[in-house]
Length: 316
Image (cartoon, rainbow, N blue to C red):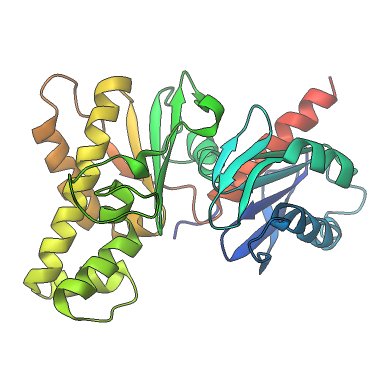
């Protein structure tokens, strides 16, 4: 993974990134450097999991605050959460992995935190970091795709994330193979069911009778000459390009940034995606497709950017 870049000068804040299995937290100092990145288990899914997540954040916050230089105190707190999240309303519309639906996070954080607190979508938060200090820096219109166990995107137009009630960027549930793999959403042939890291491993295991645990092993097998692994990898990169192409036609982004664990494959992922995009795009120029550079803590940095915006707005 790339090292965590500095956000530059700004108010010191606390930032948290909630994942399916762990919550990461850090103090971002006035120079924009992350300190004391800490993990704790994500509470179990259920009807009260949203409050349990916020309670866990509240327990972790004091130990992170203690790492601030003497005389410096965090001015705001930012939290990035998964699922379908309406950034503008502050509502967790739906999160399958953690079991919440229509949760008013804005109300909960007002009641539970002394610091000004903002909650936002995890992928859009990571996208904010890429646009500020990563591979999207300098672009106004961009597409940032998070490729991991699932697939989602952050869409930026004129430098701002498109939210549309939280549903913008759900590219993982674009059908790319008619009648293809069953998806957890109930459809068939979705991008996420074809080209996510989990799907690549699952499809290879079924076709090969193997028991690999992740896409890295499939790529290693493909590089070693395994024809089944090569076919699975090629179908995944083709599906990814097939989903990106209409987005490029509609939005004409200046850059497409690939992030997440799958993007660590580097040119083994980028090169076939770029080649297939060039074939699919006959009118709209193909934008650069690049690997994310904001690092594994991009979600934390994006949450910090949101927190800084809240702190700066409150100081005016």
